[in-house]
Amino acid sequence: MIMQQSARSVAAFWIIAAMILISMASSAVPSPLYPVYAAQWHLTPLLLTGVFAIYVGGLLASLLTAGSVSDYIGRKPVLAVGLAGILVSMVLFAGATGVASLIIARIVQGLAVGVVIGTLGAALLDHSLERAPALAGVLNGAVPPIALAVGALSSGALVQWGPAPEQLVYIAYGALLLLGIVALVAIPERVERRPGALRSLVPTISVPRASRTLFRDVAGALVASWALGGLYLSLIPSVLGAVFHVTDHFAAGALIALFTGVGAATGLVIARSDARVGVLIGLVALIAGPVLTVAFTVTAILPGFIVGTAVAGVGFGAGFQAALRLLVATASPTDRAGLLSSMYTLSYVAFGLPAVVAGMLEPSVGLVPVIVGYGAFVVLAAVIALVLQSVPRTAAVEESAARRESGERGTAEPSVGSQRAERQRAERERSAAAPSVLCTATGSVHVVD
Image (cartoon, rainbow, N blue to C red):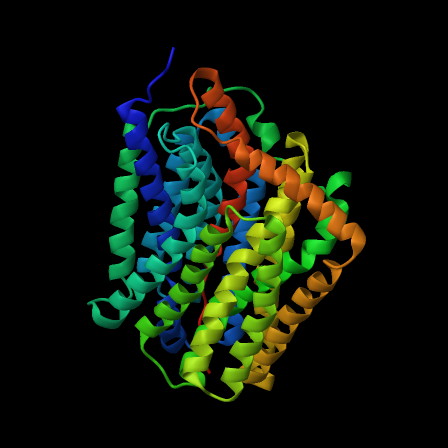
């Protein structure tokens, strides 16, 4: 007997996709306002990059602890709490009067985003469309980085041309988040409550034996991808003003949108290709992108700088997602939580720590030398990973992982009855966590001299 998907479940699918877009876009909206905050409150580069790192710390803390709690208590309660937390952060941003209130807002935002993002990805898969079963995985990967571009562009436009620039954008996204909370009523709950919620809050950080060789060999790709993301989202927009004398807030949003938008497009292009090819494409772009960006920053050639940003976006999109696909394929379902936690930890340390170090060095050595050193670090990590790809043992492990990943990807067929539930479970293990990591790269900082 064929079970037709209900209209309510179909509607829930699109509501959840919209929630992902709104939640992630709202995470990017503070970006164009950082120069305003820095000028008004006389914030140092270290303070601004510290705010960036605090966001990442809150995000990682909630992601590692509350990331799987919805599997025990249900999606809707976790979504309600997470969306409400993001809404509270919008209120705190709108009422910020100094660096202390800004820090509090960023902590709340990081914690709330970490709670909600994995649950939204899982909920989208819960209501995967019968007629397009692969669409959930595609949207899980594509919507978050697209949302970052939307958030940065809309914020930049409102800050540049709208009234009350320090409040309007937060009010607008707060209203959208409130609508999202109300819309939870229309979403059917697919998860039955079961014991173990408290136990699930204990982080599991481990690399299973079967994954250790590949983890070591692609660690450079993870570090380079996320360090590059931290570079663009924390320091590169400042170059527009300091080097190219572009002070338009919309331009800063557009730069972030270019970086994240290209990353999203790249992720879509390589999604069905051999993950090994994706890793190589990503590593080459992770070398070429920073080289171009640094070179055209030093020579103050804006068109070349924009080209370098686009190439860097390719590396950001391909380098991490392809490496993650290979790694997840090496671990059994029972080992994936610990493996993903280890990847989250490494990635977010690379995302936040170099930005803080750069903020400490910038006052004494200058912004451009810091950019050069930061870019050199990203290139070094990518070069090491690229060299390790030629090691025979690495090639053998990657070939095995690629075959396994390709086999899992090929099993996603339209399903009925219990087959649909089984597909959703397998798809969730493979897809939900991976795209969710990318979409949380949202905390942008602008350093001004």
